[in-house]
Amino acid sequence: MTETVPAYVVAPPPVVTLPVAGSGALFPVRRIYCVGRNYVEHIREMKEGDERDPPFFFQKPRDAIVPTGASLPYPVGTADFQHEIELVIAMGRGGRSIPEAEALDHVYGYAIGIDLTRRDRQVDMRKRMLPWEAGKAFDRSAPCGPVHPAGTTGHRLSGAISLSVNGVERQRGDLSQMIWNVPEIVAKLSQDYALEAGDIIMSGTPAGVGPVGPGDVMTGAIAGLGEITIAVVEAEA
Ligand code: MN
Image (tube, rainbow, N blue to C red):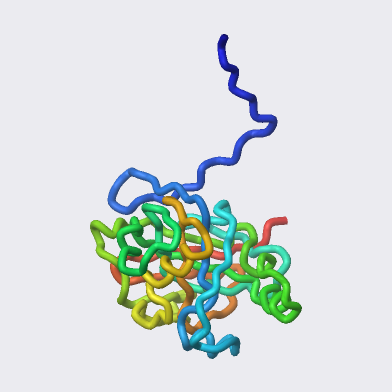
């Protein structure tokens, strides 16, 4: 008897990938996790929460990824579209309750990401104690650059992180200022979710977040990872 493969009734979604720096290989993305607050100065500018609260996590859909160099139409449903430059951790191995001391062994590499935010929607949802999806998990909300293997560039535990708009610096910090560092993030997140290879984690943003609009060009940089550039263009008709 021949086994028949069931046909798809609609086209299956494509595999979402990030290029791996320095090779023609691809990093396949499974889930996008984000850390809610991870730099003291940003918590202060957002006027939210206790600076020593444990980290909290939310997700974006993986097809929200936008490659560097893209032109990104101004999103629907917001009048306050903001940038958050973030270090992205790319998981090479999964696990549950990964001990902090072993966490870096599970990391494949690092990338530069921008956690794009419909700030008005996020603040509205927060006030009403509703989920953040409308503010955080919208289409094209996750620009992300190439993955740099830790085996080549080393782990990114310190070094400058910055974002400029039209050449004017808006955000600057150092990865060493993270309240929860990379091993702690992986350890904490893996207590709540079984992590898998292909998961990526946006690790929080330093102070200086702010709005962008059509005609603006964002350049994000992290020491050792180069730069990414995203242009904002008029909303699609
Ligand atoms: Mn963020």
